[in-house]
Amino acid sequence: MSWMIATALTGCTITGYLFFRYTWCLALGFPAKTALFMLSMLFGFLPLLVGYNFEKYLGSFYAAYRYTLYFVFIFCVILFALTLISDAVFGILCYTTPLLRGMTYIGCWWFKYGSVLLALLFSAYALYAGVKVPAVREAVFSSAKISEPRRVVVLSDIHIHRVISPEKVRGIVERTNALEPDVILLTGDILDDHVGRVRGITGLLKDLRAKEGIYFVTGNHEFYAGYRDTVAELKKLGFTFLENSGVPLSGNIYLGGIPDVRTARRIGLNVDLQQTFAAAENGRYRLLMSHTPADFAEENNFDLEVSGHTHGGQIFPFHVLVKLYNQYLSGRYDVPGGAKMYVSRGAGQWGPQMRFLAPSEITLLNLVPEAENK
Image (cartoon, rainbow, N blue to C red; front, top):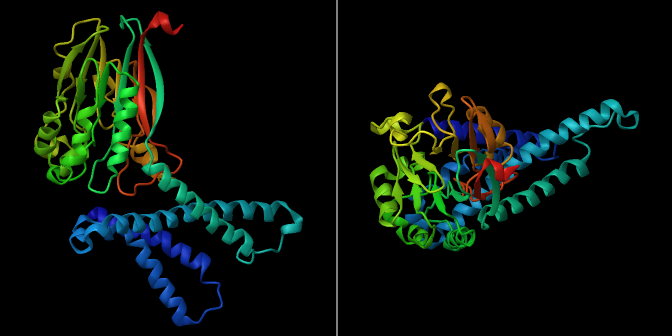
């Protein structure tokens, strides 16, 4: 309930600001302005009107309905950000440029409605960026502990649900296999719906191929969708589940996995790094799968942590909020204890099937002996 209240307040703040910014100055009567204000408030509530319960009323039209409502809402979000930025730019120009002094931003319709057009174009691109097959993003990590090069593909946050395009999932599988990985790591939030409802789409992941296997850990959305059911479903596909446990890999690498650090305790699970790497021999390169990027500080007993969860912010300007809530947003980091971290922006997305200034990715980690990286 709290997230619904927060979503409604955020949405109505955004759309209410846009109402006063774009329509209040129009030469309209009070009834017309009241109707537009009510419409703007409805737009603020759109994220609460896309739930799966609407599918029983809309049937085959549900997917189009969901995509449309999210598109309108994200258009408002992007327009809100552009308006704040353009207000600031125009204000600075008016203050610093004598020729512009005395002009009002509200009177500059070309400046204002140019932002509307730009927001519409950005929203269309965000939809394209969300539904397309992710590009490959590579990173190299070297260590004297690694005895031979390993190609590790990380697939995080696919968020398989009933309205995701099966063609996108097929594309992810094909692009991943084309990388000829030694290992594939599924770092959580792979499933985001009732298992029985998406079994046909989830089954497409069975075509993933890796020389030394495919391993997965749970993310927060596996807990929301049903922890036991989602784990069982991924096991049926032949994937190996790691939960406070690990396995040795070639190249002198030891792979460990833990439950999601923010949701595990809700179902009575602990996050135990010591148990995860208890069987790892001294001198092995320790690779940790943790859905949520976490700073374990003095508890660090690994060399590299791979995570997801943040989506890199997914849609600007939410980058700011995600960064405030998560210390690590995307890419590579040095973490306390001398370890490294890589945070994937994810191959899918939660909520709106849209991305803006945070492209999705299939991550290829090249783990190489230290000498080969010099």
